[in-house]
Image 1 (cartoon, rainbow, N blue to C red):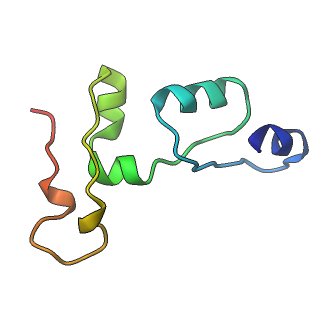
Image 2 (image 1 turned 180 degrees about the vertical axis):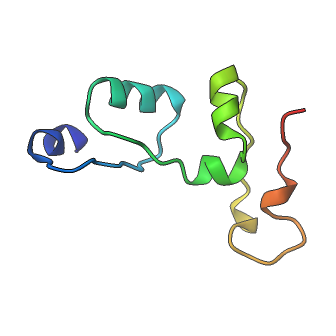
Length: 81
């Protein structure tokens, strides 16, 4: 869909459609989007940008703890050491 929007857009187009690092870089490189947002990957991997830069595997998200007040949540995902 983004390739159809690009020719007519007049403002930055932010996409959020299940991108991984490779697909995001390709879409930006092809000028199909401007910035891309990462929702679930960023929730599960707070240091997402650093992991992208270092080509380190991302944490697996656990949707059962999204947006709830359980004792395990966003702060329990493993970080880089």
